[in-house]
Length: 168
Image 1 (cartoon, rainbow, N blue to C red):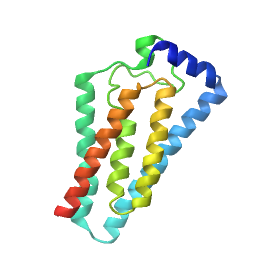
Image 2: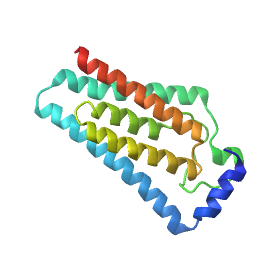
Image 3: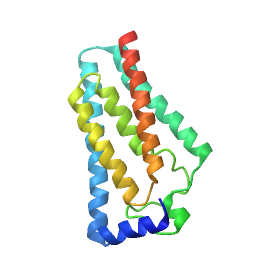
């Protein structure tokens, strides 16, 4: 997206304190709900003593998160607010490391991995992931390509986890 597009979005939704607070709270609530679903699924595997599945459930998202983080650091793409020189709606000072979005990656890898046990949760978390991606773009902290790449990578690694669930 170009600078003019972000300016139009900011004019449309406003950038006053009330609006920015809503964006921040929405993002935090989506992230918190995702974490609760993930932890509940992990605790369920512990309660059922499903240790192999627990290993996949924890290790695939964790290791893929590390891989995405390393890739982001090496690739080091600029964020919209640093490229175009505006204040994002979500307070952020990070420079670079925009591609892919780790927030969106995380929610999608968790959605697909948890979906092995709870398909409805996969759908709900997937929709929340789309909402989070849109939120991160319109708030000016990511480009659309960042959130799309994060979502695709999260789905890919979630599928890897699901294959491993069936192999083990």
